[in-house]
Image (tube, rainbow over all chains, first blue to last red; front, side, top):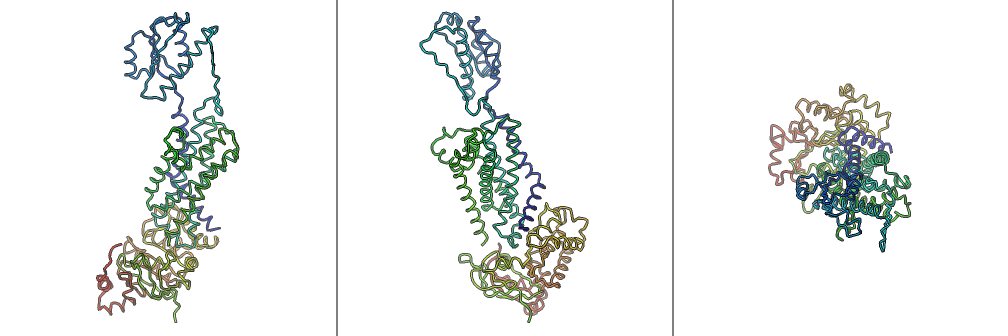
Length: 368
Length: 247
């Protein structure tokens, strides 16, 4: 036991004296949170809009001012010149154009068919769709305002609610994803590099010749990173709650335990990688490319898994962070209990046991 | 009769149909400085790994400090020290932290670590540097320190795998003084080297060629037997017949 403590102490010295390790450990989560929370928001704001107003009546003015007053648009001054559209799009002055035909107001007043053309920049389809939705919503609202008495055969007014995220906070979906990503990178990369570093320096040989059991070497290597990763996890949670206003709805203890399981999964993967290589660069590359990219793509926090071809959906099942992401979303954002996530937990547990068994077996056979 | 700390009988290690070590037999006496020579790829490292309990032999018998290399590798590890050609202390730990760590790994009690490490840094003249990172020390000092750490837990045998690689002649000489001192205190030294002048410092040497022990005697006797002026010549005569070379 004393040997064990001596080892863990040494491991902490390594971490705290290596600025690069510290930077990856604690700089990465902060950078990720800031990036994903602020830079990568899915909300579209400040859309530049060119208005071609052929009618120029009260109604078009009212509608334009409604659009202006919404926080989403920056409206260029109105003109009657169609050529402006192509010009503005080319020069990047507009992301969207709105065309009111002549007699827009008249038609509206007299119950005729009213037309309105929206032109958007299709080179960015997601933004384009969002823009169309915004304008449609504004015009619908306006229509009801100007002709409330108009009797249509059916009037369906959808009342929408976004469950679990009533305010439409864009950070909400990213936080569990960032948690999965950061823990994955930190645990896998740092553990594998720390084991491989000892191989590179020749100290691993010394350790193997010592009475310290090889199995204990691996465990003693993993424990400091487990502790640091838990600290990291708390850091991410604190940032999420206080910087990005994400509320933790479920049990923090459950979240903590699930995260610990995920961290152990990642540590096992790190140990597995360290067995397959003798160079720090390879270890780092393997954990970055082999873990980070699948995590980004197959976790579902950047690209919806439902839209992927079946093959990729099947592959995504093999990615541990995918399950962790589901668990965190359920517990943290929806406030669900363990009975809702036991299946995901079981999958993660199975992966951990498998990875750990292979890692330890490999380590032993490599010795003899 | 002298006490034997290493006994090897027909020790063999085979990888597929390649005999890395082929029926080697020798004894090493307590307190002896035993040189283990051979060209690269002759099988020195493999033999040493078996004796350190890192690798199981394919056949043959061997005991180290009285323990069997097949079944009692844990007991062997407790009784040996090891230092390799690669410098192997932690560069971002201080001298004292390194000593504490390795002492701790070998189960030396904390109070004793404290006392012995104080003595050690004083003896090495490193008191002023004791709290500095090992990475800042010159290579010669690192090697001397690594040797001191390897025998810190007072093992019965210490294995040195090309310990003086890349070290200047003066430091090498000092290093050998330390080896003599350790041998005098009863620690058996098992050392591999490529420097033939170092071979002369050993009590007895073994020369391995193609996995076999080709010669085993004191440097003086070997020189007489091969009618050579120095160990270089002895080594050259034996090793040039080798079929394997390189690592």
